[in-house]
Length: 362
Image (cartoon, rainbow, N blue to C red; front, top):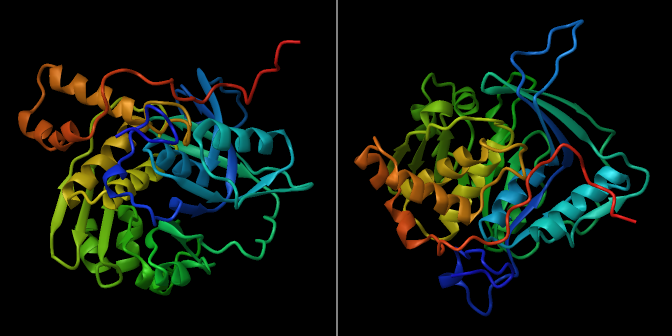
């Protein structure tokens, strides 16, 4: 069913909505960066030389990656973040609020604060990032998680203070985690998993926290902390375990020609959250998350590369008609037949372009 907020956009939760629902489907908080993405590099930059990139894009980054991915999948998304009062901050705010329909009512513009910037260089299927930012402004009082179906939290040294309270009010918490720069990989950093429904680390993070040498064993070990553990396996796909039922699911990655992997992990989380809130089986959620991530790496940028339902429908129609497709592999995505919108194309999605905006004609 189309979304009432965005005509032509499928609402995956339409059948579940009722009068007493919270206004927000998913709540996020974090840092918004301006991302400048350089692609088409033949190799890593070499010291003392100048490299030219054949492609470039600009887009909101950081927590904006996941917020945009969720909004493009039809979820009512609320973001609490600080924005600089410079042109970069204005651009990111406009792109998220006006371009994507993300609720920024809990966000704020901070006077005299420079927007954080990340330059991402994509080459050989990987990326190297250089970031710059001033000390983040302190959070304001009253930034607790609002009433929401779900929230996504990043675990780390400074645990989000709202996680326990949000879970206590019925919000379903999905957690990811960043790289531990200390190298200790102390499981105490995962303490808030006691309030979470699912944890979605990558293979290296999962193995280091569980002291295992196999990502699948790590996923099973993580169910001691959280009901559902999802471990991304890079080019191999993803593996998930439901600790309550014992159900396991593994879905291989979809082979695509990657232009820019920036934000693919965030898009994966957004796809899994969408399927979970919609009540899909574990294997379908895993397949959908991997599909959305695979489609995202074919475009510039983290946030504006996220696919919408039309892109997902276009991929499904294409692979069903393409030669040499494995019928068994296609059956893994047959659940899309019940979900996808009619073939009429809506307004095109905003994509990352080499500049942050053009001046209006005089």
